[in-house]
Length: 246
Image (cartoon, rainbow, N blue to C red; front, side, top):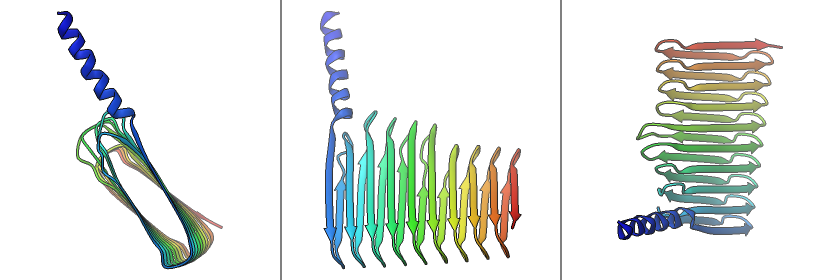
């Protein structure tokens, strides 16, 4: 009996040790036409990756996998300049968490966040912040297992910007905020108990929300003139709200 207890204790100690271990990587680049890639694929450890770029036509990619109990992934990309590209690809597993942020200041930039949760009890927070003109933000959250939560936020300041959020299954929260003219927000959240919210300030903006499932909430707020709003919901117990005004 004593030997069995000691064996179980040793196994738990090893599992705990795997979960708290962490990898850290940082890249800083100043100039144009640079490329930075961070890959952290040890699924038994937590990961922190940071890329900072100052210049034009730069590319930054973070690829992470964290699958152990209590493991986490933190991915941060900051770019200042024009025609830059940033992408975060994050996979998390059982009882794992993700916190990813992309910040871009400048024009004609592209930001992509692609999250692939694992089996159950996952927590994902994805944030994209863009300040400039003709920028594009894409956030995708897939789902495989049961019990989960995700929070996707996209904020764009400027004109002629595009924000897209797609999320699978249940308990997801997507928020898009756009300030400027001729902006477009697209949200497609499937499953139940999902929340989609779009806020636009400016003129001639377009907002579109699609939800498939039950007990979902869709809200669009547009301040200014000549806006277009579309909400499509298929399922039971859903709520849709549109507010348009000067």
